[in-house]
Amino acid sequence: DGGITQSPKYLFRKEGQNVTLSCEQNLNHDAMYWYRQDPGQGLRLIYYSQIVNDFQKGDIAEGYSVSREKKESFPLTVTSAQKNPTAFYLCASSILRQDTLTGELFFGEGSRLTVL
Amino acid sequence: AQSVTQLDSQVPVFEEAPVELRCNYSSSVSVYLFWYVQYPNQGLQLLLKYLSGSTLVKGINGFEAEFNKSQTSFHLRKPSVHISDTAEYFCAVRFTSGTYKYIFGTGTRLKVLA
Image (cartoon, rainbow over all chains, first blue to last red; front, side, top):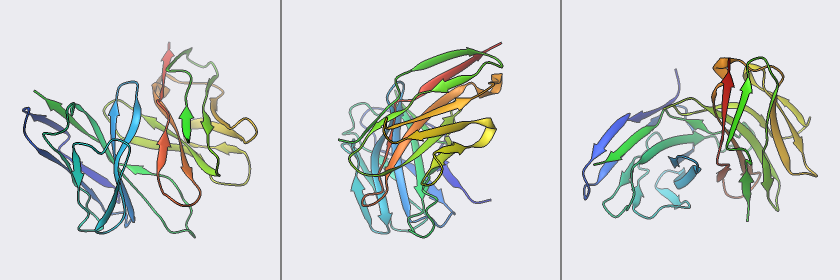
């Protein structure tokens, strides 16, 4: 079955450590996204990428970094510069072809990061 | 600036009663509209979407929504809810051209009571 796989599901980190969240998709989607979810704040966009080797900052990119070396993969690194990294992180993907126009985002199951 | 507003953070409703979850958006350009559902500690699943055409959109699990361009609204409705509908619901928009950013509302927590 096609889908988006995020790992790990749960992750604990000590302050000052970098951590990388994995996101892999086999949907052949062009675009991939990372969102952060906090209670009462909805989903906020961290980074997105429309094509391999290119990505754009979202609304809350500070303290995060990404790479897009392969179409299927879009890992997110939460660096020690992120002041409040405890959150639920969601990866998503979508088709960009104009003739398809399905439009929606497909989401992974999320990764919950807790800083101790 | 474009934004999505879900005025109700929580909506309690009794089982088998109807429910409406409200969504209003602000945008100077055309948008696509979506409703997603999220169960605890899971990702989001698409309930329904409006891309073009008929303004009444039917989705999964008996949900429907109506696009009202003049009121810039996209309210979600279900005529009779079940306990299993207890979840968080998110409204989202995406611009029809240009950037492929999606903007989400802050979510509405639907609690269905027995």
